[in-house]
Length: 165
Image (tube, rainbow, N blue to C red; front, side):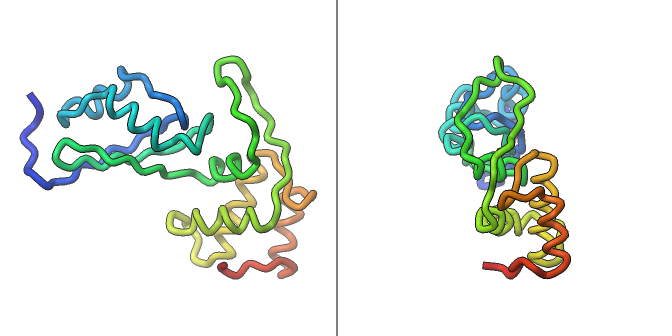
């Protein structure tokens, strides 16, 4: 029997999933089963909501009110960068150790920083841009045909526009 939850009370479940794929019902069941939801239906809702993030691991926030789950995607900085690289989707089971060696424009970096701003730990927008550039180092891509470390130095020297769009 599901736990007694007052009507209108919101429950939040956060989980990590691969975009555009139905997660295993066995992994969803312990999280959403006690709240009176069908893991299969929740998995299909997650698949529909993460269709734009096909093949990329993203965080998903399920807000459950009156046995109805609403799905919200919470992308990480690396997920934003990989999506901006616009690489074709790969089969995760066959292709391992992917190198994201594409090239991003400065506008794409600013767009990612704007989307990441509410969740950023930085005080200023320039700090959020530096977070995104630092993530580009670990992802392995280039920015404007330069390494992210060179771009970081250009930001520190004030050579690039870091004002909020």
